[in-house]
Length: 334
Image 1 (cartoon, rainbow, N blue to C red):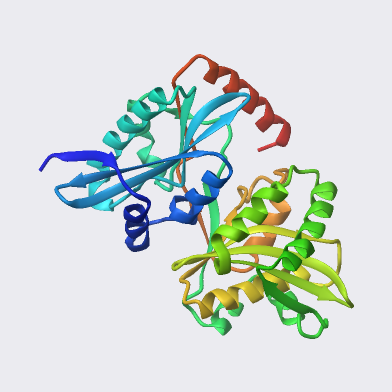
Image 2: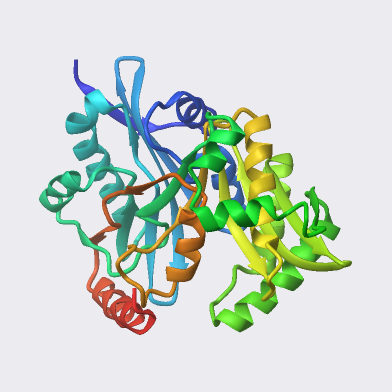
C-alpha cells in the first residue's frame, strides 16, 4: 500500500508519541511544541500513513537566528521500527519541501536513531552538524527495579553520598511555584557565573513550568536554612528528565539529594526510566561536561548513543553558520 505524508494535529502526534515503543523524549511531545510556540516559534507536524495507520511522525520548529533561519526536528522523527527503511526517506523529502517553502537556510534533524542510519541522510544530501542542540549521547537509568537494587548498582562513592543525605540534615522541597523557581534561579545564576556557561533564559524556564504544570517539578536541597542545590525535573508517562541543575560548592551532598528524591518521585509516578540527559564521552577528560558526566554516571545506568545531528543546507548562508559553529565547538572543546 502506498505511503502518504500529511500534516497531523497536535492530538494525533501526542497519541502516537504516548504509544510509541522506541526511543523518545519529551522534545517530540505536544507540550514541548506548545512551549516553543509560546516563545514565538512556528511548529510543523507531519505524519507518514499507510492507509489509516500512522507509521511515523516528525515535529519541527522554525527557528529564526542571526546566523540563519532553520527548521529543527528535536529528537525526531519517531518511526515504528519495522517501517524505518520506507518511512524515513519520505519524511526527509517532505521536511526539505517545508524548509524551502519557509525560506529556511537549512534543516537540522537531531534523531534518536542508530548511527548506521546516517547513510540514509547522506543520500538526501544531509551533512553532520558542527554542533548539537540536543544531546546525542545520554545516560539513562532503569527505575523499574526497586530502590535497593538501584542503590546496589550505583558507583560506590555515589552510594555513600546518597546514604549520607539523611545524616547530613538536608531538607528537600519540591514544587512548581514562583517560590520554587526563585530558589532555583538564584542558584542557577551563581552556577552559570562559576562555570562560565550561558544559562537558559529566565523567561523560558518560567514558561516551561507553566506549560508542563505538575509535570515540571523543582527539587531544592536546603542545609542549615541555606539553599545548596536545585534541580528542574520534567516528567511524562514514560520517563523523568534531569532538565536543569544548579548548586553551590559544598561538601554536603545537596545535588545527590535532589536527584535521589526525583528518582523516587519518578518511581511513584510509574516512570520506567530516569533520563540524566546529555553526557560527554568518558574518555574525554577535557570536555566541559566531564565532571557533570561523572556525577550522572555514578547513579548507575547505561549510555545511549545516537546518530549525531544532521543538517540539510538549503542556501549558501548555511555555510556561514557551519563555520561559526565549527569555531564555537573548537573553543568549547566539544
